[in-house]
Length: 322
Image 1 (cartoon, rainbow, N blue to C red):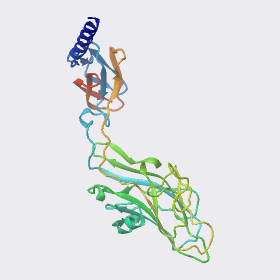
Image 2 (image 1 turned 90 degrees about the vertical axis):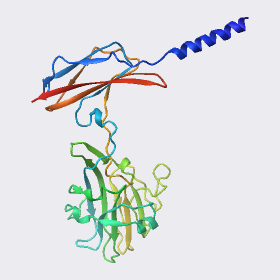
Image 3 (image 1 turned 180 degrees about the horizontal axis):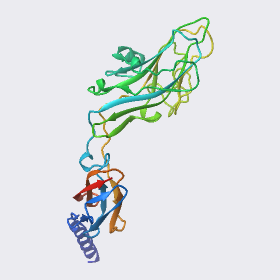
Image 4 (image 1 turned 45 degrees about the vertical axis):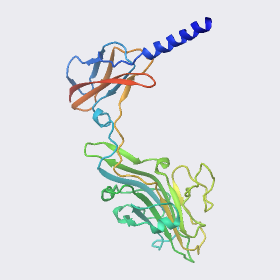
């Protein structure tokens, strides 16, 4: 009898748990005392409708727009900026550093690099180092718009060193490469802006004893101290191509290549969580706009459990004056 009662109790408990449903926070509302504010004037958004699990705020500013929260692609202006340093060797000389773009690179090995179609865009940058120095020269803002129709692109710095019995080959360093996609609405997405997210690899086509000091395909700082050419693998800028100081070094053909990137990539706009599950429901939220304009402000009110979420969207139109 006790076992039967126990079983009935468990079944009753399970049934009661199943009856608990997530309800949409339909009573949630947001109001302001007026619809026009000045730049720098705090806006108080008043909440009503009881406690809800989560509140997310979209200010309507660039990068904070509710309607762009799922946008991941857009055609904009693609610009590349980097810094380079040229050291040792003779001026003028036969050694060179070229900047190239490929839209069909399939792998990071010598055969793939050789088979790919590369467009030389070296002349799009007019600010290469003109003297031998350890200081860095910042490039022009290099336009890559004509490659945006491709599904992916890879950028590459190609060092070509010529054997010279009387001089050492050129030493190059590269750092702080930044590639952006700037949309007409002002949204800027960093496609590359750090050493780590650029995903540098090196490929040596000639004279494997000399190479850029980053990893190769399948070899990185995570699994090796040195790359296949024996250079210690860098995990931060600057990246170096160092042929040493000896004269008569054999010809070199060494590539420093980025990971593939879609130039149309856009970072979705994001909201700010102003109330999370477990926290007390605030009576209001304060926000200050720093630029004049008309903004569609959006609050998402949400109730949720592990399996289900129900939400309501509340929007206000605000005018911010100078």
